[in-house]
Each structure stands twice: as C-alpha cells, then as structure tokens.
Length: 293
Image 1 (cartoon, rainbow, N blue to C red):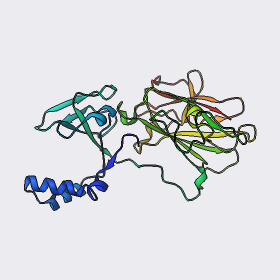
Image 2 (image 1 turned 180 degrees about the horizontal axis):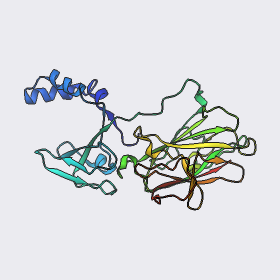
Image 3 (image 1 turned 45 degrees about the vertical axis):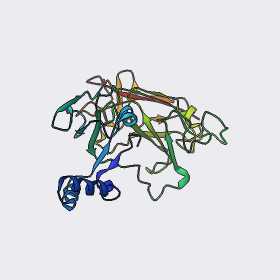
Image 4 (image 1 turned 90 degrees about the vertical axis):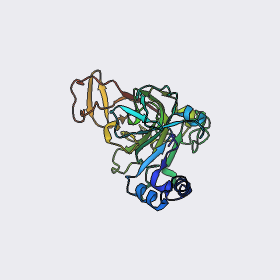
C-alpha cells in the first residue's frame, strides 16, 4: 500500500517490542501489561497518510493521533496533552502538525487463489509516476505478441479512499471472457491513484494485460473494477453507465466496438445494481475506464 501502513499487532509483536520496553522504562509500567493492552485491541493499521508529513516529520516535533473509524464521521487528531486538531477529510492540504492514523486493518495485497498461475498475477504501482514493476517494458514500448485486452486510461472523479483525501486508491481489474467460469484471470492491480486523477495506464504499463484474449477473438470480456481497501464494498465499481443518465448493475462488457465506461460510486446507503432507470440521486463520484488491444 502506498501509505506505508504497519499492522499494529504484527509490528509490536516483533521489532516494535523494543519500543514497548523503552516506554516501560520511562513510565515504570510493566511492558507485559502494555503488550497485553495492545493484543486486546482490534488489529489496526498505523500510518502517516500525508506524503508531506511522511517526508518532513521528525521525532522531536509534535504529532497528532487520529482514529479513523468509518468513511464519513468528522476526523479529529489528538495532540500530546489532549488538544484537538480538526482534519478536513476532503482536503488534500496537509495540517500544520503531522498526523498518525489508527484505522481498521486492511490486507497488504489480494490473497492469491490456488487456481491463479504466477504469470497471471500482474501488479502496477503508479504512485511514483515512473514505469513500474512487472510492466513488460512500460512507456508504451515493445510490441504485443498477439492481441489481448489491455487497460488504456483510468480517470477518477471525487474517489476518496476511506473517505479521506490524504489516501490513494488501489484498484483491481478482474476479467472473465465469454464461456469462462467466474474465476477471473488474470488480475491487473493499480495502486497510488489519486482522488481526482488521470492515469495513462498504457504509457506506464506498456503491454501488461487485463485478459489474455481480445474482443473479436472472443464475443466479449467482462471486467470488474474493484477498490481493494478491505472496507465495505461501497467503492466497488460494478455499476456503470450504459446511456446518459441511466445505469445497469453489471461489470463493463468489453466488445470489439465498445471500450469506454463510466463507473459510478454508490452514494451512502444506495445501490444502483439491477436498475436501468435514471440515476437518483445523481452521483458525484465516478471512475472512467478505457481499454485497448
């Protein structure tokens, strides 16, 4: 994950145990009691979400601790001494004081299923805006040995991971061709996507594939775009626009002559799945995806 998250249980059960020992020496509290307290907490992720804070914070400067409990409640950090620091969830600007977040634990990566061969696992990291790992040359270079489905463009509009502008989005492209089982293959993963971002996937990833077939060689390919943050599924992009102002609940079906889709993020408590009428209320968050081959 691009926020460099640590698992609270994993960290303090390993190399972080020395921190507990030092805290025990400073406070006189038994380090076993401190460890027991941490073990009894839910497993949490610990991280500094804003990149500027990660780059500039030093241990001799204050830091606020903010609990992230859901995707919509007001976010508040607590400074040493108990002072409160208000945090605007939808502003990308950093606060003057660095913030350390405690939030529900998220998986570090998608668990590989037994039926997925190693060559079917594709990973694309875009945060650095440099040609990334496993991208087969990147930069749009190289030549495709045979036609197959590739991601071309990804555009986000007001997509806030965990409802927090300081975090980035992680998407997976899960593809199933006509006549295949529901076991999608392969997977392309895109990380480090901003809330309002335009990503030329083909430029950064070259010939990395979403599916080994191409429209025309098979009747169609269904592609589910899933936000893999481990929270509730309200940011899984399975609902897409089929005509102006309407939606039908299904993954994008890529055919030979149709390659671009708008995928709506559900407003809180509302699902468009199975509906093909006008979108009410009008969504303000969406992802646009384009494919090529």
